[in-house]
Amino acid sequence: MNKHTFNLEHMFGSKTRARLMSLFLQQPKELFFVRELTRRIGAQLNSVRRELKNLIDMGLILEKQSEHARLSGTLAEKKKFYTVNTDYILYEDLRSLFQKVSILLKQNLVQEIDQKGSIAYFAFTGRFVDAKDISTDLLIVGDIKQELLEEVIKKFEAEIPYEINYTLMPKDEFRDRRQVADRFLSSILNAEKVVMIDRI
Image 1 (spheres, rainbow, N blue to C red):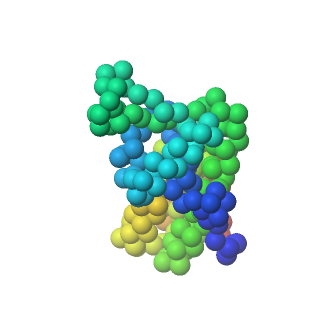
Image 2: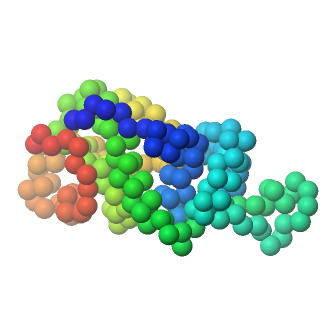
Image 3: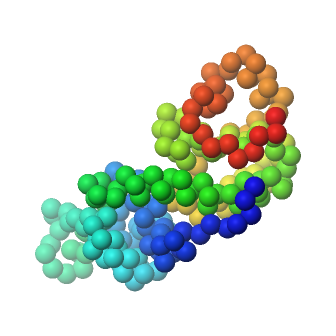
């Protein structure tokens, strides 16, 4: 496994900008208020405002205002919300890039889980590969204490703008369910996925 650490900040010059882009591109139908964005990405208010302006000037983000907002005063600012511009010429390219980069950013997750248990199989699926019909985002096969796994997952979730669903399965159960063509397991194995560990 590649030991190099990939950091979006290195590619885009700003941690706040990279996290904002990741959030908007992964949730293109969502509308966000400034205060919500600061909470979701764990950044300072001024930093978020500055990078939002950069992204608006670039054309990637759209600023909109509620029809019921007043034209002056602090209420108007509170009623402004932001969303990604899906008509932006590089939208699909950036969305695809961030989906692929997110896998690189998660390599430390794989390594940490692998070190804390005996892992036979590990795959990113579900929302990590934009497979909305798959109900789990991580398939982990092997032996690891549940509390250790939950601790790692919780820490991982703090770095990304959403919760993830994961499935932990002992190796014997995985083999049995694969042999009988279990519907749930087959739906994962036959769908798009990124396999990080395969020792089965």
